[in-house]
Image (tube, rainbow, N blue to C red):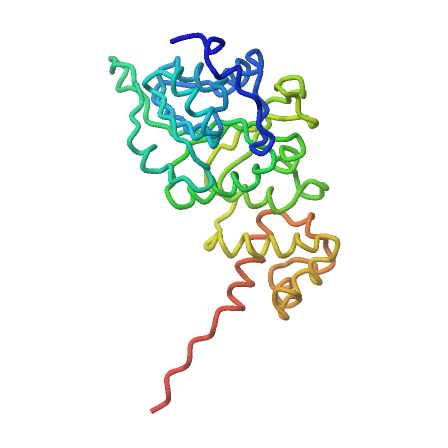
Length: 296
């Protein structure tokens, strides 16, 4: 493999329209260590950029599907990446990555006396453009709901977004993104990065978070309706829950009482389990009652 410094990768000027801030090598090494790649891993990388994460992850032998929206960067990285990296030029929000990921087979160590090698894990990594962080998280959640494909996602995001993802009830950062992502897994904050960890340095601080995919804290029969209720309630977070829910259904007060929730509480005080009860009760009240058969 040639040195990236001898190609167009390092000479690429960051493009503001793509929100490009490239991770410095020393910090990239810390992120790769936090990812802790293992035999059996397959990676989806969102926005590989100059390959700060791509190349060291590829050096482990792991197959990588790297989706890059910048055509010039994708072309330059393709000249540096080894054969276990598949470069796709496109928008990850619009690209169907599932068929490509399904076709990637990890390198595994030979079976030993202790048993066969580790199983296949699809993992997501990336340095996300800050203006698209929430849409990308919702896209990953959608794919996970449809395909149960991912094991975890280690992603660099703006510090404020990390605060929202890891927030707890009764805090100002607790909101739609917090509750929605709890549907698909648990968030762990791994590492905080200063602006100087990137070139050019952004005006905000950043964090690395890990989303470990798994079932929600309590069962949610209809995730789409659940998110719809959560978004509506948090859309009026300064109001009491009773008033916020009235715009969704005139039965708001009865639904809240049946759910065991005081209508005078604020949206940010509701736990995931309480939102789940609220959504289930709301959906049950709104579901049409089937017509009774005629008496003969």
